[in-house]
Length: 165
Image 1 (cartoon, helix red, strand yellow):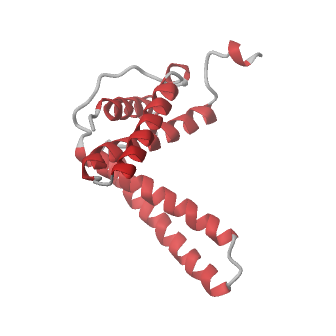
Image 2 (cartoon, rainbow, N blue to C red):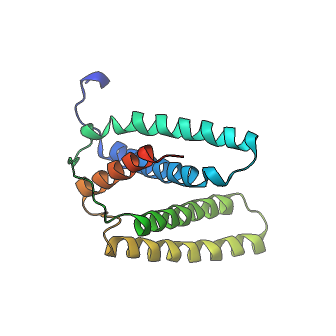
């Protein structure tokens, strides 16, 4: 089957799409919220370029959501305002920490440093679990409902795109 003929994304593609849209939407919101605090003009220009790039990426990726299996059109919810944003930011940090520590372990030759990284990795995994559990309990991360999860992605992406800076 030719790529152009495909009507649905594969499951693994859908999950990668979710991760990228979620990550970039959170980053875009953080950049826009921080923009006014940046006083250095050169740095402010870098922020503008990053904001522009992320907006373009998100708009481009959102076009693939109708091809995602489980995609459902949803109405926006106001429930997921500040606490959902802060929780998602914390989840992104904890997920990145787990990945970075795991990668660091593969590059470590010194036994004491490897043991330290390993202990921190185990703690980071537990930290990630706590944040995920909080988010799932409060409806911020519907991990077992793909349609709802993708709907949350679209809501967050649209919110990030609408934000002024």
